[in-house]
Amino acid sequence: MVTMIPWKRIFITTAVALLLASAAFASPAYAATGNQGYAVYRNGVIVAGVDQWHAALMSLPHWNSGSLPVIHARSGSNWVQYGTWPEFTDGKTYQGTYRPKVAPTSAARDDFLYVARRLVDERIPYNLAYQVYYDTGTAGTWVEPAEITSMRCDGVVEYAYEWCGYRVYGNSTYWDVTKAGWLSREHHSGTAVTPRIQAQSYLTKITASLP
Image 1 (cartoon, rainbow, N blue to C red):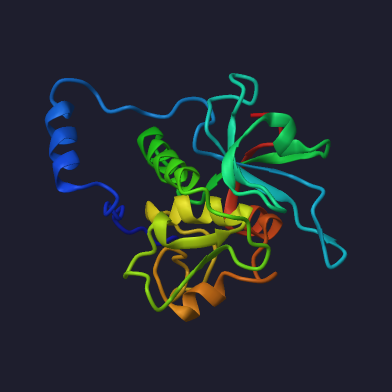
Image 2 (cartoon, rainbow, N blue to C red; image 1 turned 60 degrees about the horizontal axis):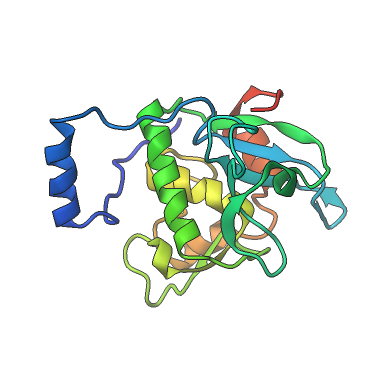
C-alpha cells in the first residue's frame, strides 16, 4: 500500500504563499510536461562488486530538449546540480524512466522539480553512504534543504518525491526520508536502498526508451 501525505509547504513563506494564491486567479498553475519530474537511471556504478546504477530527475521535458536536462548528485567532490545528458550517462547504458507507484499529476511533477531545484540552490555535497545526511540534533521536524549536509543521487529522487508525499523506499514507520530522526536517517543508508533497488523495487517503470 502506498502512503500519501500532504505536501510539506514549509519552503514557502506566508507572503509568497499569499502572492501565489492571488496570482492563481489570474493564470493557471504551471504543470510539468514531457518527462519533467520523472526519475531516470543508468548503470555503471559498482559498489562492493554489484552494479547499483546512478539516478537523476528530469528537469526538462526530454533528454535532448536543452543543455541541462537532469538534476543529480554527482559523486566525488561534486554536489547536487543540473547536468548534461552525457554527464548523467557517462558513457554507460540507460536503464529507464520511472515514476512513483502512485502516478503523479503533471502539477505534482512540477512540485518535485521545485523541491529538487532547492537542493541545487543549496549546493549539497555528495555522500556515498546516506541518501540524505543531516544533523539530527539541529534539524526541525522536517528536514529542509538548508539542513542537509550531504546526499546521494537516489536521495535526490527520494527526497523530492517524499517531500511531496509520494512514498518510495522504507517501512511504514521510517519511509519518509524528509522526516528528521536518527532512525529514519539510518534507515535510508548503506546498501539497504540503492539507485537500482529504488528503481526496480519501489518505483514504476514508464519506458526503457530515452526520455
